[in-house]
Length: 437
Image 1: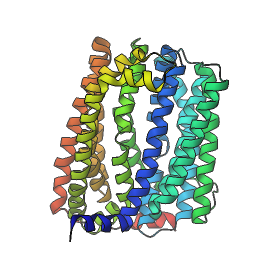
Image 2: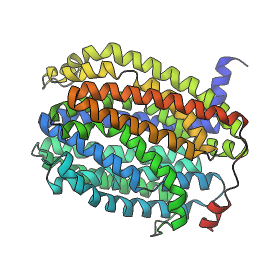
Image 3: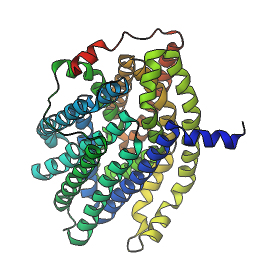
Image 4: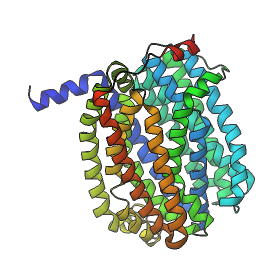
């Protein structure tokens, strides 16, 4: 079979179509997320933008804890034959209750990391990044479970479009302050989440009702939520620590560079979303299949990560000029520090491309506890290094710490995943089925 014919077969297969839909949604979100971030960097004062970056990072860490792994359980159970509706209801209820409680807890830490942000503004920004963001994500993940990523693409793009509308409204009518943006942010996120949920409910003919998780659900979701929380700390803790140690402006420009690097990973995320259910199927049947599947996908994701990393590295010095051309009404010199940081974090996409699929192979083979141990270890390494290097070297310490922890995480994942070659399938999912029935 010719290479062209093979590509056509890949594109026409279920996983190929799902990957294309997932790619469309992720690319749309890429453009929107980067546009919103750059737009706020241009409109807000430098100090306000640094505080915004730290607040969002804190909210993202909390939200990974608050959803209690419900979205992963939904994908796993539906992929293994359970009906979608009760899982959807349980996931939505968990997100709402968990993020509301989590936001109240997060207020305690506000005075430690971002005391300059008022409690009201902090709560509004947190809810827009937690409750409403994760409701929209639940809609996308329901489509993953049903292997109809075209529905997820519509949901994701609806959420993104309304967030863009809120940014435009803020730019034209807002006061240009962080307090003003908080109201526009929660309005756009709330409407976007509502639209995403309606699309999902109509597409799969399901209804949203109050359906709290059981103790068994929480217990089974705990490894997933601990893993996600560790990932959130690994990914986001440096911004709050920069503001904690009075490097508020550094938190802003470091956050922009880091966001550009991580947004470029979204095509890899699209591939991961499209293959989540397949990992659970292969892992339940034979862990060695999940491992081989991860190897094949990593060849593609690592190749992409290397290419995009090189592009970022060589384009970064020209970022101020690009900003001056695209946003002619602003001074691109404001982004010189961003360009410097971006060159240093340019190879983060390569590291993420190497990490993604051995991690999913472990989870799909019901070895998520192994993934969790590795993730917690990487998180602790990152946190301890940050606590030492950030007070001494500001953003340079954050960059060095991030790359060191990410590399250690990638190596550990592959060492653990290699054991799947001779592993036996995990016990059946009877307990999971019992909680649904």
